[in-house]
Image (tube, rainbow, N blue to C red; front, side, top):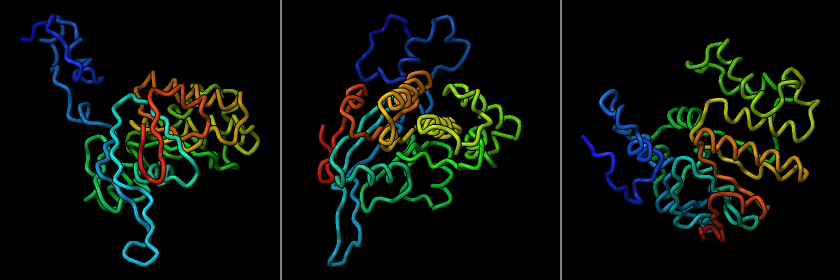
Length: 265
């Protein structure tokens, strides 16, 4: 039986260990207090990741050079750097849309190198949400229908649960009154808020945002950023946020810079 007054070391301050050490003493005999492997694992871990196109040919181009990156649960990390520096390639690899040429990648402690395309698709669908610079909504569908799309066929969301989940997310992004409006009839800021709701449909542990405010005016950009920040803080969603806006980058927990395919900061 542990002593509740035992000192905490700095490496015990991850969310899982924080819950472990701060569980009320009266509860420790009622339920198991050991954290799961998934809770202790980093949400994203890259080691020595390289990406080269046309490898082994005279026109081989190496875009990423030995990237090491770890993101823990609940981190909100900005990615900055000039165009062509490798930011989008990095997000594609983290998002399991592309494979590294060398190095290792793990998502929630699961190594991805040996996973086939079907397994990668399943891991991506259940663990990762995407928000892009363009909303990529189906404009002939309503806002509610667009948010339901990622849940189609998911065992955990039968029809009624899927609709309820989508309605809740639409409400959380402040668009309940527009739930049944066609996406094509909404403003740019509203469309991007629907895109955020859609990205969160499967309750992902990781949200990848690639210039999500790039096409928006200042007010709409602030609203979208505030939504991402709120979900990050309330649900512990890890966010990797690519931006050219230094004011938004300053509001993130940490910032990494990509220069010529290498990380700094």
